[in-house]
Length: 114
Image 1 (tube, helix red, strand yellow):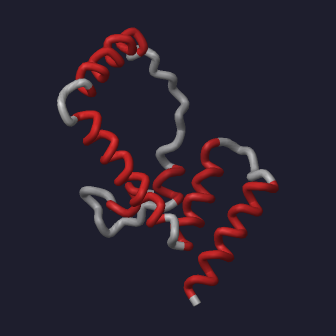
Image 2: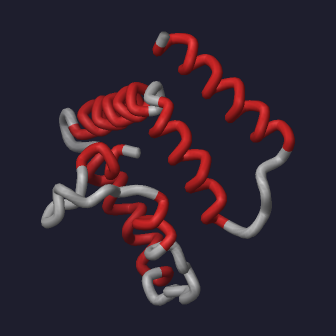
């Protein structure tokens, strides 16, 4: 959602919609060559987080990201896009509960737009 709101760096006129994600969501190659570095990476993250102000800044950034995401999902078209993007993670249709949640969210947003 945030990438969509930000737009593409070299093509601001292009929509970051379902097509954009469908064309890039293949995940057909497992790249495990980074796994041997995982322990040292976690150790380095811990070192960085221990620096004065870093953990606080990190937490603030995550909160700002979450707040922006929440704001963006109050738009009915963004909500629809997010729902459709969930189909790209596999070939499983949404559950009845997911369908109801989607419908209820659309109805809630439609009421606030009138």
